[in-house]
Image 1: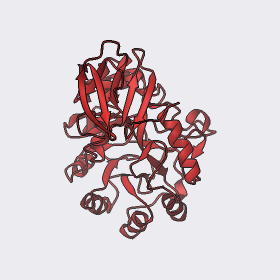
Image 2 (image 1 turned 180 degrees about the horizontal axis):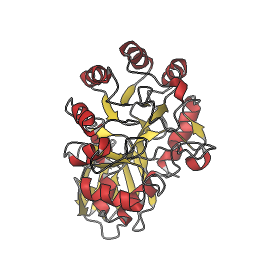
Image 3 (image 1 turned 90 degrees about the vertical axis):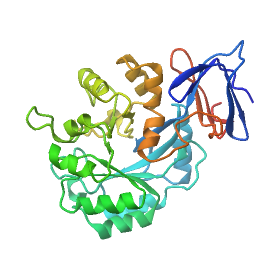
Image 4 (image 1 turned 90 degrees about the horizontal axis):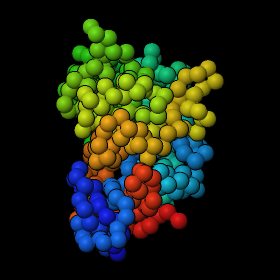
Length: 343
């Protein structure tokens, strides 16, 4: 099957020509395409989705995951991590047990635990009563409950390094966030093998010229991927521009979508966003990122964070999870395993 496009994004460069798919995989690109339209790009990967299309993943059953996953396809997302914020152990365990191994919409690559091992001073909208200091036994119970793929924690907490070592040994990605870490504390954690931070600048120690904190430490290193929410609310345009210029090539877009209208609590605390991934791609492109760079920030770079070597990429032999974009950066077509998933 030919996609009928006039170009494809392959390994970070736009290659003119059509794309051919067979048996769920890409088998060719750069093919003759006299009447082709649109750009074939790797499907987007979202590392932080609290809920979507009215579905709160804390309450979702299999049908809820199906509906949310199908709605995510319309935003270009072909794979994602349902995300669970700080909550009592029994609620986290129950939610993790409901995460399906397979989904009829966007692929589920595992769950993201955003807590409960977070700084009590940087919780944001996370419930204070459910915050926990690092606890190896609790972590083991959570890991046993469901397919945890990514854990956000605060590296400065006593015992955090033991949890980091446990998670990395099991090939579960670790991200630093909701943290009051100094730059030294952040760097000590990065040196253990952690290579990403959750929603940079949000719910973390503020950057100061003599105390750059975790944000400054992350931006100063070449081996740390910074996740950002580009919804025009979580980061000022100037801040987002500074992040891009400092960390081009290691910025991962996340949506942090939530079912809370407006993404705020009643007292105005940010609880997430309502931005979609294709909107975040357009926002990054508008900041000055090239089209190729903006798309990779939503695909290959998030895949790198969780160690998915075949996801977020388009190439011969790779799974055909593809989004076709118009010249206006609208989602025109989405394929998962080579099958069209949009009406």
